[in-house]
Image (cartoon, rainbow, N blue to C red):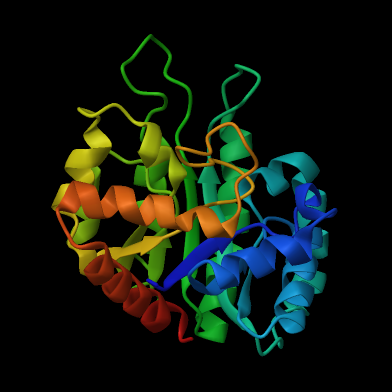
Length: 279
C-alpha cells in the first residue's frame, strides 16, 4: 500500500461531528500516514490543537483566515494575544492557513479598507511564524474579474502575497490549493523557500486547463498533497463531503499528469511534507 501525507485537512469542521473518529480511522487504514489539521480562525485553531493532541499522527497548524479580519474588523486584533497562547503546543508544525482573499462570494467587490485589514492580519501572523521558526501555509484567492474572463478570478492577491512574503526569506511557504497561472508559478519557482500543494479541484479541471501546464512545470520535489476536506472533494467523490482518505485521488491525478509511477510520487511527496513540516 502506498503511504501519503494529507497536508491540509479541516477535521475540526462541524461536518465531521457525527463521525470524526471513523473518518480518521478510515484515513489511517487507507494509506494516509500523517495528517496536518489546519486552523482558519481562533475557534478552529483551538480545535485543531486539541485534535492533534488527541491523535498521535495528526499535527496542527494555527491561523486566522483572511476573511476572519473582514468579519470582525479591528476587533479581530484584540484576539491576537489569545491566538498566540496556542503556540506552545508540541504538535504545532505551521502557521496557517493565512494570506489574502479578495474574492467576495456574494458578487461584490472587495474594498481597499478590507484589503488593508487582511494585510495587517497577515503580517502579524508572519511575524509570529518568524518568532516561532515555523513554516507558513498560504491561502490565496484573487478578486472577481470586472469583465467576463476565462479565469474565475484575478491574480491581484497572488501578487500582493508574493510581494509581502518575499521580505521573509527566512521562512518557508507552501501555496495551499494552488490555483495561480503558469507565469506566476514560474515566478514562485525562482524562490527556493516556496512549495505548492494541490487538492481535489484538479481532478475535475478540463484536460486542456492551464493547471495541468502548471503541474507539468513544477518539479515533483516542490509539490505536496492535500484534500482541503470537507471541501473540494475529488472525482469520483465530487459532490460529497471530502475526507483525508481521498487524498489518493489527488495523488493519482498528479502522477498521471506528470507521468510518474504512483509509488514514486508517494515517496517523494511524503518526503517533501516530512521535511517541510519537520515531522
